Length: 404
Length: 234
Image (tube, rainbow over all chains, first blue to last red; front, top):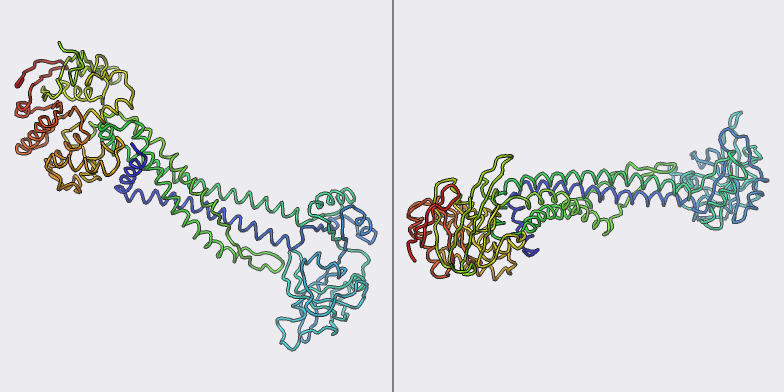
């Protein structure tokens, strides 16, 4: 028997029990659709998270004292770290919450005490909208984030201009301390990275920050490496230098951890979806076993007109394979709709960064993913058809013809 | 005696023993039968005498426990499933008491099925199926399904399916068993006509003496043995 005729014959059987076929096909379609949706969303989340983490700079390492340790970073540490080969920039920083008085309103944000020329390390690609970078050695100059210069709550007339004084209020042990600084730079809108929101920050040269906060030590040190590949090595050097007294974080090492978590979670979800597809395969097996029982006499007739056992096996197997194939094709449609639907829905709940802004997830639907899901559906179909088809092939034609 | 090759069907000391658990039931006990090419033989006998088993063994649907079945000089014992299936497809046509048409297929599709199994292209097998339907006088129901046909019509479609592949042997198991007198006569005329015009060898299992009388020879079975043979036409 030719393949095309076996397929034609199988199709006629599927059409005959239309209701049952539709249900089994739907089972497969939902399983395949879930696989597509969950895997494409997993990849989409991976991309979003990667992008977010890379805003911290893949070449960066942040080192700060571990909880409970009494280590305090000074300029001596900066010098020491500078000597590690492969390190391009070392910049310490201090940060504290503060309030900025602009016009008639108050903006809450953070002071970032850092050498302003190295601001790019924390906020890669940040641009100056107006003015010039504050001098590294200045005790009076500051740069302000976009929302500090243009407070959203205030009227358009109460914005900050270059050269204007900015009043900063910081809490101290004895109450609050109010100091005035000169604005030399207004930074363009940048948004938030994981640690800081650039738009509500005031960037202050280190001498000014140390005096304002009355400290001589640093909260953390940022280390910028020449190449991403050197990050691991420099981390090991830093660990050798400080042992357990410090915590060392690098976006690229966070990234590999987070990616690992997302990957295993995606695999987990994919496995659940695969189980649903396998269960749908049991549905195929069930209908096929019933079909073999109902059509026993037909099998006898087919054998009497010259079908071999193999022909009978193939026609029944094709019924299951076709169920898988049609289910897989419909599943592609369901999967695409589901992943786009899920993405627009879950994007509102997956929030990130200091302001918990919603992250747009774009599901990654590749032709390869669709093909794999389709092949998996066909595979499940053929697997579940194998046993019933073998049973059909082994039926004794004489007994089959006697069945009522 | 003529050599086996000159006969359409040769059964030689054929035994068929069915086993159910530990009990054995011999349906055929050493049947020897020769049918000439172009002969039309009826097989009669009471229920349980082994008529249907004889037909199944002759048609290679069942293997004899002992003995030989030779069809047009081909010894079928020891052939594998695919060779036997090929013999059924090319050499043999079956007609059953309860028609056994496939309900979801049209008459034309039912009739052309043996040719699909043989691998004949769609158009050629549809043409052959139409021709077979014409021979049984039913070309106008080609696109009707079995449920839309009367019993007599269904049996004629089943005969068309049996002869579409131009088999040399047509085996009919109670072909008129479910039919009234009028349709019995119609079906017997068709079978006689096939035998005459196509030279097809026919073996018809029947209870009906009127059907048996239309044949060249009557073979009576009892308890799995040939009890008697009567030649009506030489």
